Length: 107
Image (cartoon, rainbow, N blue to C red):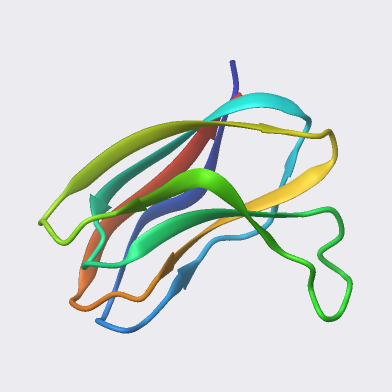
């Protein structure tokens, strides 16, 4: 099993998005782990086959999102993607400051 860090221990002011870097997913099943204070926002797992295209064709992976207005949230969900898919995590629509935001995948 391998682990990729999509977002690691980041914080931001209310209304400021956190966007992780694109990572290559080698295909198959994975676990999408989210924890930290999301500031009332939502973390999404996004995917694309080619991040160099403009406009960027991004898909949000159904079921791989986590949101909560409480101080700390922890969540895990499953996904299955084709080989050579690029993935990233984004935290959007915060209503208060976020802190200690972590997103990882296990494959």
